[in-house]
Image 1 (cartoon, rainbow, N blue to C red):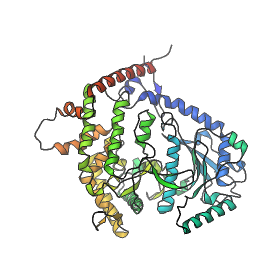
Image 2 (cartoon, one colour):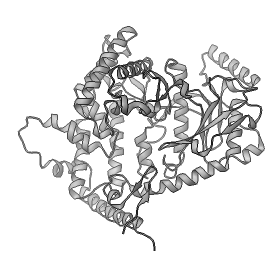
Image 3 (cartoon, rainbow, N blue to C red):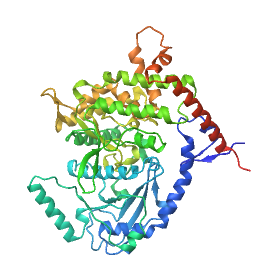
Image 4 (cartoon, rainbow, N blue to C red):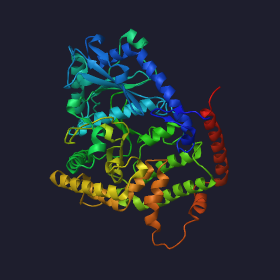
Length: 532
């Protein structure tokens, strides 16, 4: 009889596993890999204390202590270890509480094995987001980033946390560079650890971020009260109003390209990384190439969309269990072909070259801290933020109560969308227009763009782009029906015909995919067989 196997957050049986659209063979490895990684972190607790003391300029490593393992907070892509600082003597304390978080990306979840450097890329981009928000959008509440380091050893500390002379010199040099019109580095400066013992005990091949801990007195995760209170009109209105202010703050400074910000080895903040999002790292973690080099950025929305669709193409080509049958293959390939064909219907001609708005793409309910009235007190976990076309600035899918990205109900989301756009328009009237339209002198308002993208269904097109395994459902339910409405024709041949326009050698790819699926099914069944 097949046995139950352990995933990261639950147990799974073979009957459930064989029906999943994701690569369960990869997911079966995570539980063991997590245990091994946590054991590694436990063995380096003295080193972690020394790292915290280094970034905060504490007099001794004994001035701080790591939380017990039971208090470690881990999600799908990171583990956060709370650290309590007992004595800030010698350090500049800039937070109300005494705890900080050291945050490690989970190498077995971000594609590090398939594409070495992914974890460092994620860290650099998240640090870049902190630096940019601190300097450009100080009204957006975020934790303080104290420092970070790459797996290769490059270490950065916030300038005002450096020893006095070092801090004074860096501030002076930044001021001089500014006077001469030169590029000024970010607030994070190279600050290598000079302790030989510390370096010998370094946690090799792992980088980290050191961040302020958000105490409960400053708010709680929205997810802790969301299910029980999401239908409370007053609370939801407060949340939507605060979200609208955050969106408008981000819109104040459009960026010249689509991409992610990063901090380079000289401490300079640059928009020089591919638009790193969760989809890219999930695909690469499953050994699926994205054909998107780290250094690529985009000046046009249509070029960006074409490359995102290539990521979807590659999932179909390379994921071993991507198809269930030849019919499934035909319809998946047909939908991808259609998504390329209809892209111009959703991407406005006048907005393809901008404005591009920095977007927090991982804005889920556990990353938003609120007070008792659901006013936002802090945003955490700023990973996967990137500049996107303004037409892709949307409300999070879960805000209307959906539990998954491909389960968003049109009517329920329409109600929340209309409310949000009204609130957003009122806030715009109180503050400013988000940017200037390149085509006319008429101010371009985010509320108008969001209203338009909802009505022309760009919202759904973008949502489909964000979910490789959910694209098909969203396409069938929300994208295709309005396009064929009233045609009076049978569309049963859509799959068999459109498939041949997806790529060359359609049938040979199908034969290869069927062999992949057969091998996957055999291996999956073997994984669940009881050992004797």
